[in-house]
Image (tube, rainbow over all chains, first blue to last red; front, top):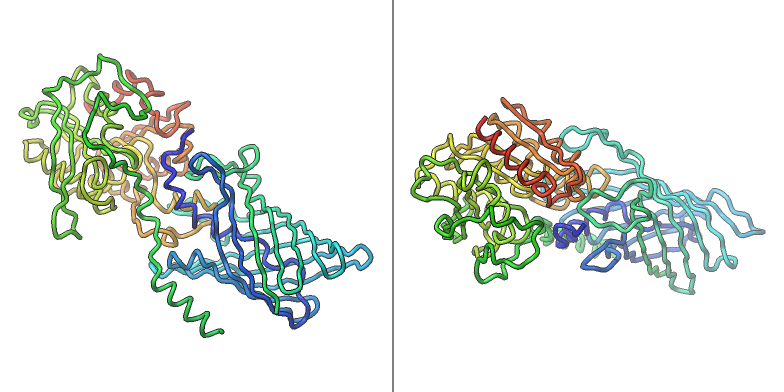
Length: 223
Length: 297
């Protein structure tokens, strides 16, 4: 079906913003290390006869507080343009690392909060990322595989309808190229792969009519 | 550094002006004239000659529409199908069109309604909202209501009485239809028909996000048909495509239908129909018969 109007693209620009960022921290930083990163990307959609990723942006600051723990905070810059202050604050904890095979597991709980200046509405979503990563060389570039979990605390939607999407699962796979001062990352996330992507106002590109595939890139400066 | 970031956030937030309000509207205002039957743009169906409207029953004219926030009126275009000198005794359908294109695109639908029941049976009024077709101005929520109300004023001025006014809203047109039936201005409709309505801006946002996100995060629009319908007591007819890929029948139309608490309602869920082809998949004859029966009930 030809969508009613692809100008509605603009609706999407922020609609999925709130659940469409890449993994913040997968492998903890060294103790005392600080980074500032820029994240760009979003789910693939059909637009004007082609497929594009939606260019969401955010900026993240992270700091290693121990060898196993890194804390971080972000600001969603695209949201700001819409008068919404949105941030996610959390910590990445390395729960296991095997030196011989250079495989580690990390868990990253976070709180994602948003507040709009228009009506003063506030929302909060707990989020937990669980990732397995493999250092291609010790302390160098790595690949990872994981799951991003979002939790909707409200049991009701608009018009007092039951909220059936209380736990949202997004599997992801990524690669981080580690350089001396910069890290470069690319991640592919499969957003809500178990949910039909039609009907809807957005022409999401998923697999077999389910979910949406997202592509993200990140650039991180280390200090 | 911290101060810089803080000031930047505050500055960007305070100066931010991106809202998605305008993106509800998808007007086509590139036309230079209304071509009606000669329109060669994309439409979802074209009626055969049996639905033709004689030229003497087609009136294209302008109206002055002024929303509460405007200091000067906006000139909009309107089409009336029917005898203008018998409006006082005719039953008229106020057709509020959807969010895209212009009246040429909706001409076939208006013709169909005019012929429900019998040949040229109903008067049909249609306007191009501001910013659509040849109408001046920019689309807005207030403008939608003002523009339809301007049409109702014209009908009232030509003798139409409340007991012969039927409000019909298709898709986005369900917003002015519900608003002006729930909170009447120039006239009070005696029947309401909604085709493929949306429940509210809040549902649009939540359908797209999966999460329970407040609509104020993205838009200042306050359209809420699901609440407006609670204040409407006039008989209500709802039709919606079961396969509507744009406005989900369950999360949009069904909510509006369920929330109606008036004296009479009827639902028509059209199998195989998407958002834009309800009359076609309904079958023109069935569509017209059901509308005619509903209006005369």
